[in-house]
Image (cartoon, rainbow, N blue to C red):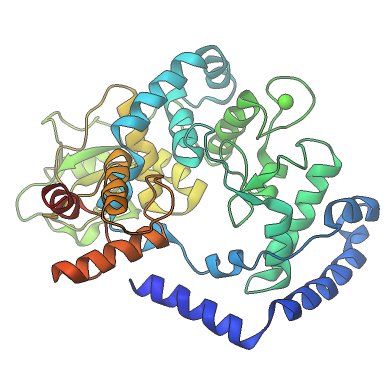
Length: 398
Ligand code: CA
């Protein structure tokens, strides 16, 4: 709820302090200045002009600049939405459909099919959601307003370079508010360093070519130190009254050292008797699931710089291989919801007359506001969260 208030407040303040006309004029001035830098940034002025004609700023991206849901959502909500039965089933279908391509990718980059497909599933729901914003518009806006303009200017010019080289179609170039695009949501600078042409048509097309996108993801993980054949980690069981002060992804000790302290896999099997460095990850504290994470977890982490993200990818990959849910439950009496359950919450809210927009399984601002209003009716804390208890209550009182 604080996030929503902060968003509304920042939007109000922005509206009060500057009118849209002033934004437009400031944006035009900024574009003129950027145009002057195009040559030194390796972009032809003609390219700059072609892609910035009649460009208007999208101030929505400035509001999103300080809003990072990964860091404000309980881990059990985050995991429940990303690794649900639907994404596992869809991922298995993709493994079958693209098996030949994935075998070739594994042979060339040393990254297994399940891991590559898991990244695909989390980043774009297997190519179903690329984001809705024009990348050039978003990055031009972020180059001219808000914090980190220097960073986004680099991404903006790189995007123009990608278009100039003809890798992707300008009209199709949509992505996240921050400019990540394609099946596996690469930032433009990452594209330039990492993307590969795997279908051999001479273009590195991360929007139009599944082989290019999946191979580029495998290349990213390879460049990030992926160890072929190693797992990302293991869910483990700690001995009673285990000293967890040594926990932390970076605080690595040999697997054998953890085993010597009595750490076991959750199925009771001994840890592999190797000296592979592993960190103890306790994403919800000592009462929740515990993991020993290896070098490949760090490679996954580098994709999105969040431990919860790396855990979601690793876990989804395990599920795609036939593994089950985590053995230890999350330490909450109000578990998170799958996307199907989130859609059910939204349908039940609509039936009660709340305007939540379209039923999409995403608990965004409108859905959160509706939930907070319902929570007020129920006399609950108004955190706008869609959990199991809310769903049960909606089902019982419809
Ligand atoms: Ca290609």
